[in-house]
Image 1: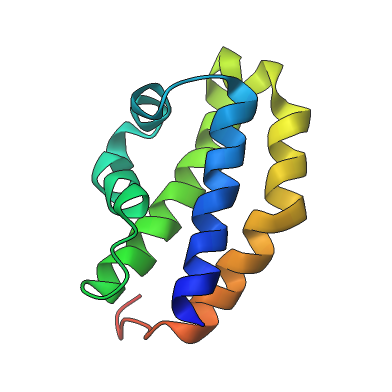
Image 2: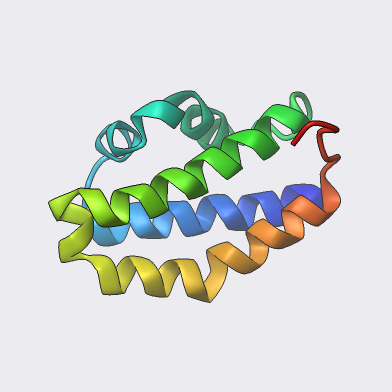
Length: 106
């Protein structure tokens, strides 16, 4: 179940990237503070570091929202990105948070 939901989150991120027609490296550059999180996501590392993955996804989601307001590329594609986030990413993200262990200090 965790792997299935996690994979759907990754698929949503990939859909956003493909709609923007940019490479994984370019997409990661937009999320420069979460490059390691994006690398983990692409590697589909779900067996170890579950806590790190949860935090990485939080940072990725935060970075996407931040970038929506700060980068011209994101602004130009705002409708497409919002559709992707609204249609699948948010729902699967919330499901993933419900499954993964929550950090005591988060």
